[in-house]
Image (cartoon, rainbow, N blue to C red):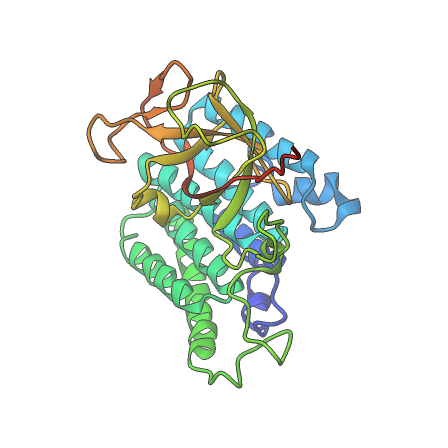
Length: 338
């Protein structure tokens, strides 16, 4: 199957997440013969099940994603988990949610690195590159394109069945480099925009509509999102000023997690959590999450466990558990009539 040729000839303004998903899907099928295991959710599944919604996410579709992740992670095959997370990345591309797609490709990369699936690692780097390109961040796109080239150069001893993948990916990387370089070297007046009065957006429009609790403010960077405190238990772990209904601003980028300077993080929802958060705005892969605090045992983020319960229960960090880093709080102010 060759679904990537037409993508490379399109102008930046006419390309969509669906086009990129088709290109990556074609490459993926050169590595993993279709169809995948029945419990792995694909773009085709989403297109069929939710065809009445077009390429828009829905709460039911997000729950389907959670379910496929639960099943695949329970089975425990790291190569298959990587495949599952990559397919979810393709789904987010199809929905034009480029930040979520990048995060999913990063997850797939980690699992494929662990299982030693080098061609898959190379494909995830290219997936992140395309997601950055679609977000109009061409410098970041070039960085990941270079990473994909380096991974490709390491594919020396590969099965004969993967030769076609290598050849096609080399062609795709060359096309992508030409497109991205052309955008970088354009003068500001030549840059493609949807509105000639403004500069190209650095983030996809889907994230610019996320509600912000601060009057007159909007989210400008798609790596940030707001959570609302939906439930809390009495505790001595978190600031006493935090109340149900307050908002927490989170940086969800992988770089923030890796270079964390905060003591508060967001993790997947846990039972008996002292503070439970809920998303606001459009659906997310995890509608409820838990606020956690870095346990001061080692002084380093990656080696320390996290605390999240009122009785100060702690757990070690696991790959994929950290969803973001807290960078701010917003407290509701109530007027008391006397």
